[in-house]
Image 1 (cartoon, rainbow, N blue to C red):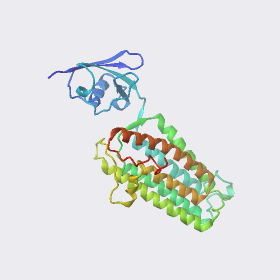
Image 2: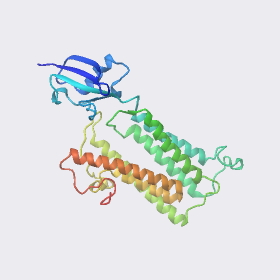
Image 3: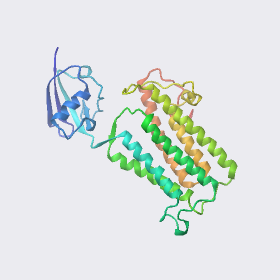
Image 4: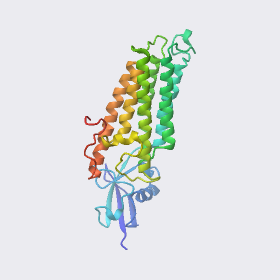
Length: 308
């Protein structure tokens, strides 16, 4: 059985960083990363991007050496991805912040509003309902992170946690300040508007959870297998007939419900920004599905049926 010689060059300077002799032909990129890590301990596998071309795409950890377009002397290019942090840690940090911050405003801890309002409660029942809905949403997200989600990538760049936390924590504080403010005024159409908004919110929360369960069941534990998601017996998943990323569709619906419930401008702005970002993600996933699966259902749109 022939063996390979593998040289790894710096993608920027083209300097030789490592030479590996007698590498098994069935070795994966993940295994080559581990070998490279032994000679360069500062670059652990999750921090490495190994590619065939200096400006090309990163190879997948499961790619096999003998199946790549290389000769028996294979040349790869290395790029440092920077310090990494696990997706679970990022999500737990992102979602714990809004939960705690919102409750600080809800209980009106000192130094937020005027001293006479410290630890007082609002006279409007919608304020208490909004707190329950907001807390429910983020507790759900935390539990899903721990027990439902299966991540195709184990880590992300450490710098992203600061950007993500600024977004989630900042918006939570902005929304909570106005909703829990002593001068807050309830929605224009009163109880009818609030009840309708609550129905929309809860419906979409259940739908979002149903989609996450369906996506989890597509991927066996420890696997990075990708399959086309299809509707299940759960009616909340039937939206897969028309949308590639219904988890984002339901997420948008939840925040539209919360906007209607609170009639608060910062909430509406958060919903709009979130919709724009989720649309970008949905379009990316939709393109990936179309590229990867020739039999992908043609009727599906990325996030909104027949529209977007």
